[in-house]
Image (cartoon, rainbow, N blue to C red; front, side, top):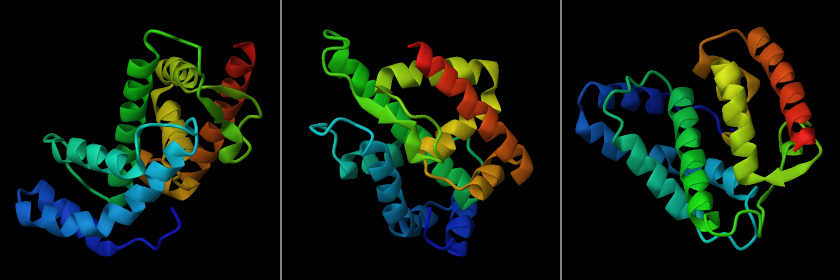
Length: 188
């Protein structure tokens, strides 16, 4: 994320977690542009004629975030990390519905080069999600890191904040995750 962190976002998230519904009304305008950037990061990896538009993706993700009753919001990084995860789920669900009858007929290409030269091969979005789910089963924190960096566009430092680990741990996990994903995707 390139925008400077807005301290009001964290304050409003905490107020919203505490039950202040008015904080939600003030929060949306502050996070909207960053949510659009995250949505654009997700959609640029989709096929050119994708039927889900950026604004619809942002609104659907925000509605899902509003419905999260059990989340205790602590930071803007946590919020944007979860927003990215919601967008990923929405896109995967959309791709599954679209491709249920014709799996593989019009594959969605994803290039891991978009984040720190992670890999060089193109792959189907659903296939990438399946590989990532296998990795998440082996190492949930590192799987979450891939999601935060690749889909959410979070920096190493922001991912460390969301995951509540050191920057050094994130760098190490990121290197291992990239190597594992490259190997698995090469097998596909």
